[in-house]
Image 1 (tube, one colour):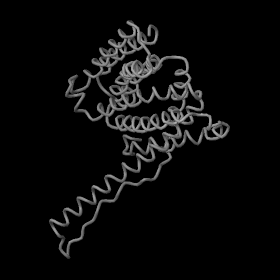
Image 2 (image 1 turned 90 degrees about the vertical axis):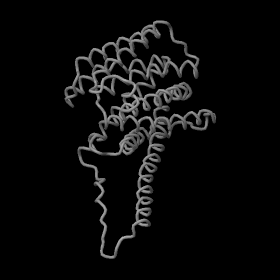
Image 3 (image 1 turned 90 degrees about the horizontal axis):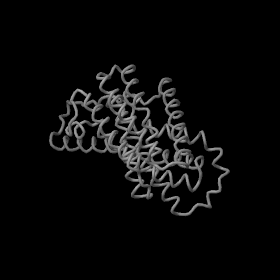
Image 4 (image 1 turned 120 degrees about the horizontal axis):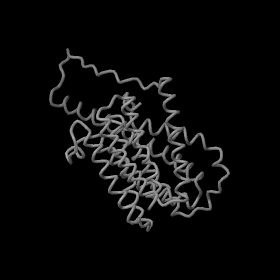
Length: 293
């Protein structure tokens, strides 16, 4: 949907809204008064990080190649280990640090398979990669707060709060993202009008905005996105209940090979051999973090 022009904040907000509606019923049986103020602070912080991080992710996927952006997600385990060490006191072992090194090596080969080849200019200059890096940092930091919520309230209650706060802050972000371009456009028009007053014979027409109607295809894709995102997050919550954050995030990097293959098969992305090689190294590194962390 993002690749077809849908706003990333809209896709994000609609996904969270569907998930909130799906789990609203059981939420009435929870005693919400038993939680401390610090718990609600963590809920708000995680909601903001989740909304902005997922919007960056959707925007990145709409602009870049899946076979490159997917394996970059392996760095989420590295960020998770770092934040887990400083914020939760989780200490990685030496083999886990070796796995982090392999993740870096694998990511190098994946990025080097792009037409621009690997360089810091690519990392800093490619908008899709910048958005993907921002997304993984924000969502890795979000994972720290989600784990605290899971330990305090349980995986299912944490999932409802994740969906509800995601809906709230994604909707607010959508409103801001829609309002800012409108205000800027009006300011530019008023500035141009002041400098070059239009003649009485001139009529200016503005382009017709694209339709905001949802097609059947859009609705189906939103439902599928909500189902997959919901399944991923709920399973993540159960994993957070048993594993450290860095180790839990490493588990989800095993999909790097699948991302490369899907990018090749569905979107005809090139450089698949080198990307597969890099993704394989990344998976080995993530496995080391999981097995020996």
